[in-house]
Length: 196
Image 1 (tube, one colour):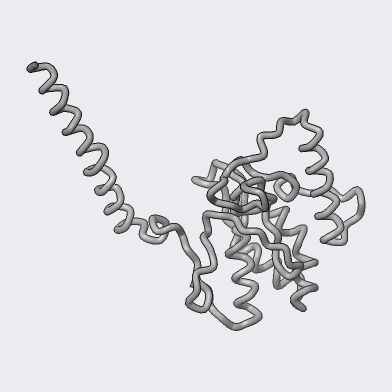
Image 2 (image 1 turned 180 degrees about the horizontal axis):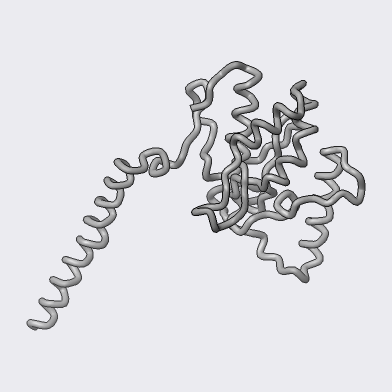
């Protein structure tokens, strides 16, 4: 009986510590030290919530930069269905999807049939919600976006470069650009609005 009582008390104490005290302490620290990140890195435009820097969105209009394809959910970018296609490198369905996406990107950006496309513009990420594209992926789209917005390509390139983020901790990944942040910055240039 003593062992059962001890085991029960230990379970209650550990449950309170790991299930209540620790999460509340971490939440409090995060709210104080990293409030923006702890609340989802949300972006507003004209006082309205437009998205998160952490979750990709499907942009399809020609005057916007297009993000990485998504296999999350039926129509993509569904945060409740985060995940990849789970298709392997030998899958004909995957190869067909990639070829179709490469053709679409080439046509959308008025490129030659044999033009090389950065992999991130033709393949979805493991989560299906990747909010960033590579610098090469952004550069490839500059002429199209600039033409559709009536801006100079050099002006759009400067904006892309100003929003580029290097590898995490200087080691992990590659230089990237957040698509939502970039598109909102483009909108603010034309409308004279500021993005928070």
